[in-house]
Image 1 (spheres, rainbow, N blue to C red):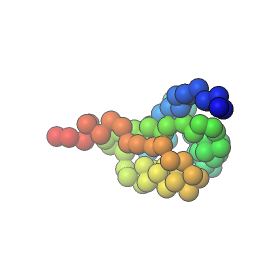
Image 2: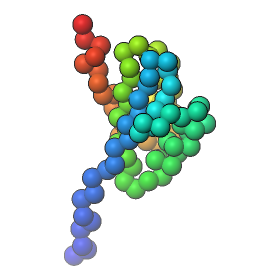
Image 3: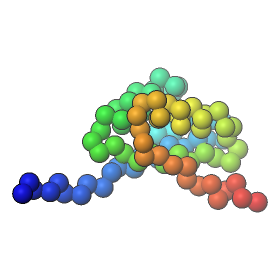
Length: 90
């Protein structure tokens, strides 16, 4: 009987999209798409992969959100979700 692997809770990465469409990785403002790709690439190679919690500000445009989602998918990240959507409910 092989020993079972202990349950490891995946890390959570908070990705915020600010009203001026900047991308923050755990509170750190990323200078551009290349920095985001580097962070996502490293996260995709982690075992277990972290969960990505994408939280767009209600005043942010959709473009940076779509970019984060597309890059995450392209780099093989599977655990991601949009959080904070209650701010969009009127």
